[in-house]
Image (cartoon, rainbow, N blue to C red; front, side, top):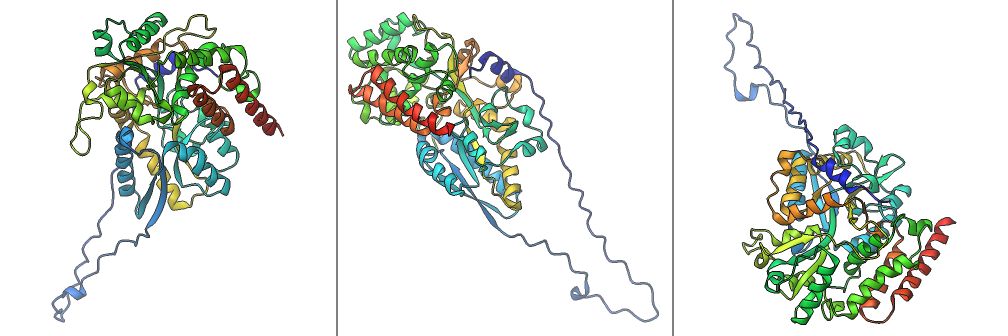
Length: 479
């Protein structure tokens, strides 16, 4: 289902007044013991042992709450810092609470550990989760996720989320997860390399292809790429498919309304395959990781890189926790961002972008009273304007909650401004297809795109293979 990004951005820019109730502690101290009435019998001098003892504070029983996160490694250090703040504040607020943090790589958590834990009915109490039919809604239907509706209504934040940001976590009107932020994917390009080679920004298809051909001729890789993990090249596949289809993307794959091997989808894979054959991507990309893709771009080995807006944080001023310059310090002031330009003869909306609120936190439905208090405090401390603004300014994560114009005016980073402008220019958007298809189907898309990069399949054969798995999954779901 396509979302209107202009509407979402308008919601983002809406001035929201956040009322913070400032509670006062009205504890009344006990008055001093009344003086004994006068007596003809001399009173003994009071001693310390005779004074009224102060009441002892109630004993607090310590308890732990497991928290699975995916904020590991240099690229996610800003998000980890925000999480650490939330954990610290929540532990200070809830007597006896101690979080047990478990950092797990994103794909391992999503496709290996969490599914196994859900199947066994023993997920962590708090965990990183993706929205959509393939993740959050599937677990919600199985009764594994906590219905957060009463909590966010109690905290008064249900209406503070941007329009559409809760859609992938909502089932039958109930909310089963909260997105930490939003994002879009597009082209980062090295403005210095483009200028030195007389190239225009890649805002049109002709300029994009001219840039790729020129850079290749100069011995510069047009696109940095790391396809060791199939989800990385699938980023661009998702946008290419979205630009070729006119409706039902991506939910139509599971409903049967669209097919992986129909002409429009094959055409999208053909664009990618043409680029592979022209050597537009990093040589040996199948051995390159996601982080190595960034490193190649930073080193000036490639002129462009297709990635999500979160990568903008790599090119920010500042130092890491060891006092070293930011990982992309060499390119500060030399990087710009644009949405993928319009594709000639593609049938879909050529302004559309892959932009959605798909990643956040979910909570186990199996919570005791103390754990429920911890979860409520965690949500209160994470989902508020202060933390949303930190995510935007420090990690370039677009907020899932409304921020005021004054708060948004604090955005000074030029790349982040370009990302926001790109979203404003889009007439429609769509989520990544991995949020709408079964795990087996998504795994097959990753296998086939890697085979394309290895030269071991064709666009039509790849699409046919994916559709075969899709039909098997659809038949299973229908039983």
